[in-house]
Image 1: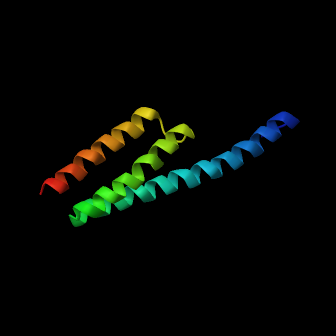
Image 2: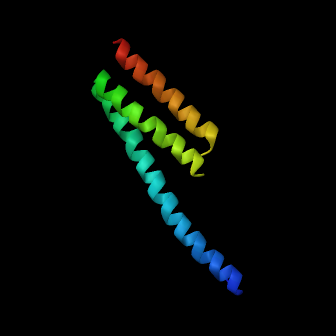
Length: 89
């Protein structure tokens, strides 16, 4: 348990930051789920639109420190290829 005033303050800050990061991660997952659902339904236009919306959201997660840059790039790359495959059908 935190004893010093500084460690108590850090604990409070971490608590607040955790809540913000949790909300961000949840928001990003929602965007990704929308892309997944559009791909599953086979709707190329909806998938493309959802992907266009999800891409900047994912990269924003990188700048805010929620995701690593390579992780976000990998997710975007894999989604892009799946959206492209749906469009090709």
